[in-house]
Structure formats: C-alpha cells, structure tokens
Image (cartoon, rainbow, N blue to C red; front, side, top):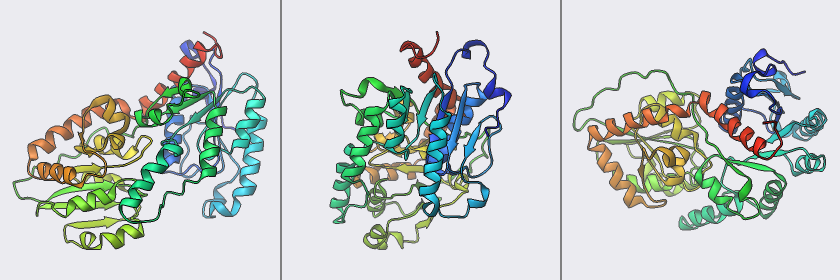
Length: 398
C-alpha cells in the first residue's frame, strides 16, 4: 500500500483541483544516476504539496516521508541482480500500475517503461508525460559513432534500430515530453512532437555552506576534475588528449569507469604522475571539494547532474554546450569548449592552471548561479510547468 502523508494527500490553496500524477520507473530506483534524479524531482514536488505517487520495481536507500512509494521488490532483493528478477518484477509492476491509474489522473513515465504500458494508457485516454533524460537516440547515435570512429574503435553506444523505433513510438504516444535541457529539446525538434515539449531542468542537493578553499600560490598543484561514466560519450578522450600538453603543476583526477579501449589508447597519459583515477564512488562530494576546476567536454547529454554538483561546490566549469546543459544555457556561467577539440581544451586548462583569480571568480559565480537549481526548487518548478500546461489544455481545473 502507499504510505500517504499529509503533505501529499491534502491539497489546499492554489494546488486544489490538480490531477494526481502517478509516476512509474520500471528499473530499480537507485541512489545515483537516473534513480537519484527521479526521486529528487518527485520528493521535492510532494514536499511542496503536489499530488503524486510513485511505482518502481525497487527503491534503494532511505525513503522520503512525503513521497508515496510502491515497489514489487522489497529490501531482501537489494543484493539480487535486477536482470535475474526483471521479467517477473516488471510484469507485476506494470499490471499493478495500470490497475491503480484512475480516470482524471496523469501517468508520468520515466525511461525503461515498455511501449506496451504506453499503449495501454493511451487506449484508456490517460494523459501521458514522458521524461527525456537523454538526447533522442536517433540524434545521439551518429554523434557517438563519429566519436568512436575518430578513435578507430567499434561503436560502444548500444543504440540499435529497435531501440530507436521503440523510443520514437513512446514519444508518439506521449501527450507531453519533459526536455531537461536545450540539447534534449533540440533533439526532439520534430514537427510531430515539438509542440508537446515541456522545458525543465535537473539540479543538485546544494550544500548550505562550503569549507573555505585554500588560497594557492603560483606553482602550487591545481586539480582538474572529470566525473562521468561512458567515458567516450562524456568526452574523456578529449581530456586525455589535451592533457599531453598540460602545465607541469596541473593535476587530473578522473572519477568514474574508463572504457577499456580508452585505457589502451591513452595508457601513456593515464600512467603520468599527474593523473589519478578512481571508479564509482559514493563520496563524490569529497572529489569536488578537493578539486579546483571541473572539466566536462561531453558529446551528448540530457542535463548532466555533475555540472550542477560542480557549480554547487564552487568549481569553475569548462564544458561543451551540451555538457553545461540547462545551467550553462540559462546562466552563461561556464567556459565553453567545442566538442572533440583537444587544442581548445588545452588552452583553457593552461589559462585556469595559471590564474587563481580566474578560478575563484568563475567558481564563486557558479556557486551563486546554481542556487535556484537546488532540488527543492526544481521539483515544484517541474510540476508547475506540467500543471500549467494541463490547465491550458483543459485537463486540469483552472
């Protein structure tokens, strides 16, 4: 059963008359990545009083008291690989979700929800909201294939014709699509669906205060931080190529798994004394606090959480347009580099390595600019955008 709280069940004032939104995530709602994004948006919205519920196969970590969650896999399954129970859990989850949706409610579907659920909801006339966490796959695939080809590597993106077709059908069935960044919106610029795009953003849990950073003298080590999985997609090859000409006092810290092919191609750079790496870590906040500059020359993104997190920790940001995402587009508080341009990135690295004033100024500006992107504001803002559109379309009462 859902555990309802007063905050999520009692609507008053300007929120009265809003339809209940039932959110669904087929994959386990993890404490990082997409799961973290989903729970952060939903929990902040329920704390603000928006009426919603959440179904997922498994909910890892602690629960938000205001967020009504229903799962089909309890804590005992927390250590069981999801692939081992996916068919059974998915079927049960989707049946229960479809049975719970009532007339007048709205379905909010996160990636991995199968097309069959979209079809079932559409046949019943249930308004469907889809979350576009990444660039549309038909647009992303050629970008990534070009990046792998430049490295002489076979494509490692996993985007197939079938996945592209299924995503296209999902978007065709959706009544609304949340696009969290200008890049995702541009990738959805199809006349058949562009009118249904709802602009949104992601964000971060922004620390109320930060430890004071040590003021470095000329020649002190300056740490440049890269955070990201799927390293070719995130542009790590550009960082490694640029690092070949990095100043002697610059240090590179890589957080996240590195694709084996990149390890082979850039073994000489990765073995430099100035380069250290660590795989996945739950204490990424410590990495931001120990860094001086954030690098994110990503090739294809939805709206990268790491950019918000870096800004929240007062790091100056050097990124591509897509790496900077909504934060960069709205605030302009970052230094842009073209994708796959090691020379341009090397110039930026040298400039930031050589100027403490430049680092402090842009870092402080990033910290100030990111404050409106705390999840506390992002969740309610997302649902206000949705409900304003529902009212305009006559789906919610004025």
